[in-house]
Amino acid sequence: MYEPVLFLNLQEGRPATIDEYRQSGGYQSLEKVVRRELSRQDLIRMVTDSGLRGRGGAAFPTGRKWSFIQDHYPYPRYVVANTDEMEPGTFKDHKLVNVDPHLVIEGIILAGYAVGASKAFFFIRPSYELDAELMERESEVARQAGFLGKNILGSDFSLELVVHRSAGRYICGEATATVQAIMGNRAHPQKTLHMAEHGLWGQPTLVNNAETLACVPPIVRRGPRWFKGLARTETGAGTRLYCVSGKVNRPGCYELPSGTPLREIIEEAAGGLLPGSELKAVIPGGASTSFLPPKFLDVAMDTDSLKAIGHRLGTGAVIVFDQNSCIVAATLNITEYFARESCGFCTPCREGLPYIRDLLWRIENGEGREEFIPLIREMAAFMDQAYCGFAPGAAQPVKGMLAYFEDEIREHLRRKKCPFKEKYHPHRELWYPAE
Image 1 (cartoon, one colour):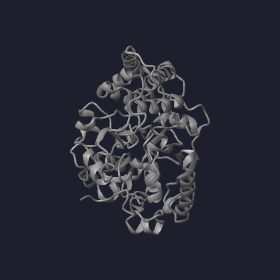
Image 2 (cartoon, one colour):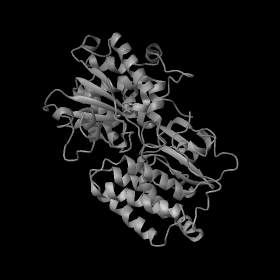
Image 3 (cartoon, one colour):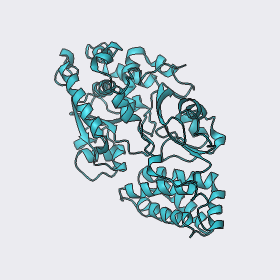
Image 4 (cartoon, helix red, strand yellow):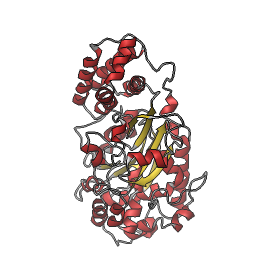
């Protein structure tokens, strides 16, 4: 048994209204801070003590990130709620916004209060247009209720919230690239800039994932110790939204305690594998994480537990493959996506990903040679030399294929064709299942 936090107000077929949100304790946290019951430092300390880490994939401690914007830094300051969500297999922010938009809105406002921001941007991918319209509508509802805009709830704190449609590229979700995209610049990362000092228009800027921000109101309302105690592991905190897709009976997005074992997510929340399917591999955290063989099924799905076995949690988006799935074809599919989405700024990413894609295509289509295996391994290692984290992430499924499914690659070489072609061929619907 567990206590829902993010999906507390889950309704059938519609988002929760502001009245339903308030009945569950919504906006009480905001009322507490604007009445000066909590200072900016108190709020940051609560988030730090809760153990909350970023839910967008990097897992950086949230309170620590907030603390980087210090009192003596200049104004104006900005907050960005990143809901670009271009990671294949990931649709948790989409689900969250459609379950409880005011939970996200209150989280944004609290982050704005903590860092002294006067304007916030809800950054969202263009294919989520209905979500963007929902957030615009509910932001106006919050404004009319006095929770947004000038002098919130009669206080001296003001915050404007703007919904900003992304250009629709994966790289736009990288925090510094997000900032560049909002300013209308080319969206490639700016690793020499520290956004706590030089973000949007050269001013202090905080960027957090929408799920991360949605965790803040419950933390303030019920306390950091309560939030940390929700996790199944000592190193985890709170609940998480786990997306599950692929060869399972109930693909979907599930809120479970942080650190829930991978086996439970697949077999209980997602209803197990489809009839006749046997588990072959799992991607645990979206397409920029490694394939895992069944021996890792009992790993706890939190950041430190995955790190302990040499892997990443990423966004917590679980993609399940059965015995008829071709791992080479799946890796080719993922690599094609990342090669297309590269911003092209640095050589390892711009040149290396198409090179890996070409070698995988030849193996999958009967033109592979033995020397391709060390070439792919060498090129995947070169991805770690890229400018930002995009290419190292894109290389993770390639490295997982080499580490755990090299025999399958060699079977392609031996037969001079894909041994699974007649049984299965990956479709893009695998990564974006219908809800």
